[in-house]
Image 1 (tube, rainbow, N blue to C red):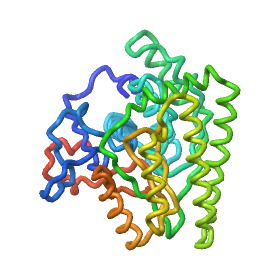
Image 2: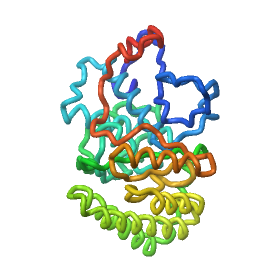
Image 3: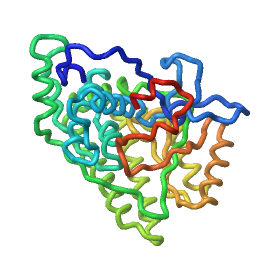
Length: 330
């Protein structure tokens, strides 16, 4: 961000990032939860719940710093401002993660619920190393340029909601992604067919949700099962546990044992850190799901987070009272 704005220096500042409790597995406690619990452990020791916390925090920090240090404040309702935030956040996040990732988590943090077709990786791969001659100029040209990505806003239909389940384990997303991409490169023809089929069934679920009615739940259930089948096949071919056997047992048990559950998947890059369920949005179903998960080996917890249409936004500072004077930057 400093390189993008070409600032030689900034005023002495203290930056504190407050992460939502649902980003990290919370310890069992009888103490009422705070707005932001202090886990009293280093970040490297906290168990992430698989909600794309790194992308969301990078995006919010990037937006905050741009808003604070840009000569002209951002207008978050303007598509041009959101595009700038997206592009610069992608550059920062890809650099931090070794330029590995789909970019979807950053896009969701910026734009909210969406169907996302990734930009060409070469846009960022050609950038020189930070702090080398020409980096600031080339970064600005890249961020301000036209990217070949596609954003299509989408939403969960009325009467349906998403519930995330925390497994309290954690997987290394960059490491898993690297293995899948290595397989895709070495087995181009076979991997291409797997990729295309997964894209087809994913698109099918998106279309079903857009027109879902009370009588369309069986079709959605079948589509989710097709998605899981393709994900397991891809994981087996790549030698990566995208949907591990333990997750398969859990998803199958919930899908058949809790009325009102349309199905579930292992989200993101997969692994052991989270599950997501599409369910009927009523108190009876939500309660039944939470009770079922609570009994599953005692390791799975339903999170309160749900789908969000809005992406990056300016928060009201009043709700963060008690967290220090640094909130002037929020």
